[in-house]
Figure (tube, rainbow, N blue to C red):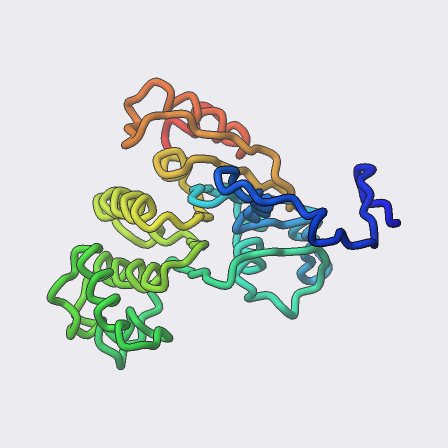
Length: 275
């Protein structure tokens, strides 16, 4: 006889056929409890050192499915280092810790990083295989407003259009995690506002978890479900943005979040009024 957790006991003697109860067809067969779904991002004790300087210090982080998280921080605070660690781009880095991310992840950078010798559609489906790859690429291009530009060369596109192609490419594989490293930093203000709406719409449709690295507090409050502030390699602020969407800076609650985040970044009220 063996004892199981919870005090249950099990006999090693099998019942005879006459001892077995007759199953009741009206009683459902008990189902095994489903295993909890792991979040797409789970980081424990992440430390990274560059040139003898600790950039990330024993950092913990979780991001849930379909959660949009923005990461703020001053220059040198470790934002891009954290994103590179999640993307698996720092395998030779000096440090420690555990990083768990899904296999299906995409990265979009500040520059579109399109291959100039490839037309738009091949750039979008780069690395994607299978008979439906081209159709998937066309569908993503249509979603970003570039239907009919499949055969254009990257040099024929504006900066905003190139970034739309990069966004289409980042979503063509239906990633569970999208990592965005200041993707709109090089765009003019009007194009950036349009891209904000497009990114939020596409994320609601495709439902990846998102980590957006940005210097722009307004961008973070506009887009994110949750905003983090990274300072000296540690997360010092982790706040949920409880505002209706789409969001407007004119909403009274928007300014409250903006001021608190600017203060966490060391920006005074006078400086914030001019930013």
